[in-house]
Image 1 (spheres, rainbow, N blue to C red):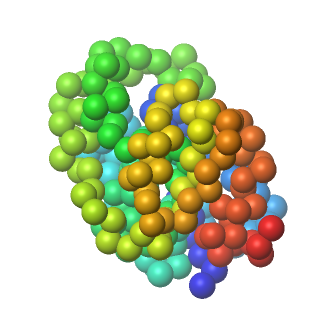
Image 2: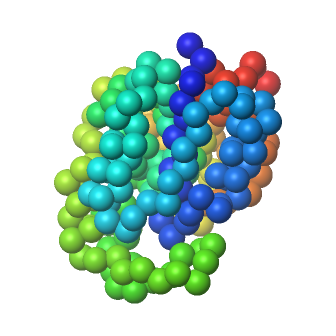
Length: 196
């Protein structure tokens, strides 16, 4: 079924102003004007982020919604998809953010503004506690994974999402700078566009 609701989740230090979020928002506005689109600014606290998201989609029809997440947003998308049973498109998804973000404890800045925020030690524990173990239904996931990702290990991502729909991209980078090349495949998986 064609989704009527789409949630986009940005990565760590990112925002709704990221290139991929803006590109997807522009596509939705032009090609799917009736689609309910939501791309919130996520709070630094993982627990608060999930609470905000669950509250925000509480009235959404689970069988007609989908989630797209990049990096840490891909981790959150997995957490939500496991809880709700919906489909998720993942872009270089974080596999073990508790481990990876432990070195970012303290004050840091956002990429798209001068805004500063604190990443607290308890956030690492929150990430560790919410990490899903096995994926209930791997067919619900489509992951775009770049071998040239300079932040996350593409082999670890591929192993985590083994059995899911995978698009392994030779080269590229963590931001997936060539996102436009892969967007048609993501939209097709989500049921929003025909096969490219």
